[in-house]
Image (cartoon, rainbow, N blue to C red; front, side, top):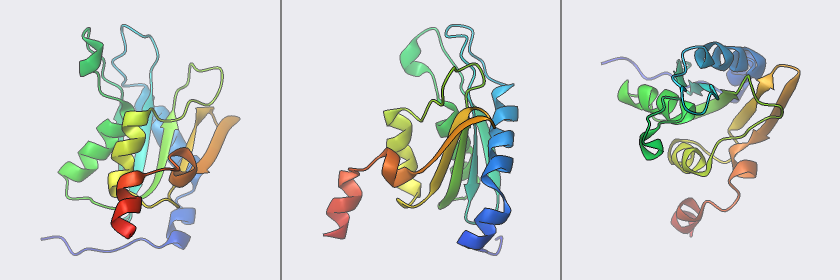
Length: 147
């Protein structure tokens, strides 16, 4: 079994959010989006220091489509990861920064604290950086567990 090594907040800053965003941008090139014509890529940095990327994979039955964020997250979890340190989402054809959908916000909160940084946009010149708590302020399941 691989030794568990945790990444500190200072080390998250070493793997800059811009670098993580560029990996998400690269992942968007693999998008399968023939219906929406809206490619999205994501990169998830885990506390182990490992980064997993993913892209949106559409299906003609839209409900079966998988978002880039969940693709990247599920890939990491399938490899044994459990704690997110940072997230980047790239939608290169968008006119404005597009944040994660509600389903992705919900799934991300399963493996991330409120202070986890999330960067999203269409290019490095057109990005927004927020915390997961700012994007999903009323995470009732975690709040109930804290009480």
